[in-house]
Image (cartoon, rainbow, N blue to C red; front, side):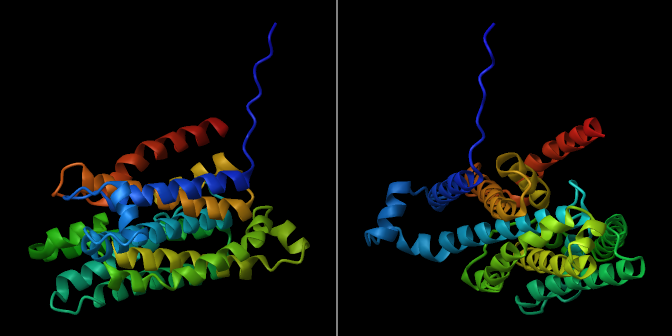
Length: 333
């Protein structure tokens, strides 16, 4: 009787390199997608050989959009992986703890009540909304000894309150509902270099998250074990939570409320590289970048020149995967 062939799992570093190559290839293809199609070879000629035919379109419109998709996708992927680690809940994500809803409520208030405010007011208000929810989350959790289960429940409650506020605002002031809904759905339409500048702090926070990955591994062992190993579990959890919130807040401030990436990117990464945070966080960043880049490219390329918001595409991809995760968790339980 023949033995079944053994499938060797690739080394985590090899998988990360493969993901990086995929991200680069998708970036080149995404630069060519739009109402005017540009072939990948023409894209490469423009940036590496100085051909000027498509330079204006690529540099001024598509390049910043692709870079924003890569950074935001990476931020949401890392944020989801951190939250799932500190909450020890595989179904946790920035949406679950209410940060995304807080940013959405603040943005809806600015869009509807302050329509003549400068453009910079929207991302600033969205980030402040996310920060306020995070502060409330820390205050409530501190009074209940910062248990992971309590943190998740408080986040769900705060998110529900913010969602109710969003709905009330849209019902009370229906004239600007369309603009609000587009922003709440999440889209990279009209995003350019000015919005990319707002994401520059992420380029400093992402490496910091990688440096703290060992602490995430310790927290995964449980608070008692972490304390026994000399780790200040509560303080470490606050720091990691703050980093995840900042990454999510900046992302939502620039592109709106794009869901599911923080949930599914870490799960895909675990299947590829395992649970060790040192490789999980980079893999989650790359998977998140791939998901958002593909979603934005599909939104631009399916029915040009009309664009489908990237948030709708991620929902179409993420909702079935979320149901699959729930089914898997039920079987495991």
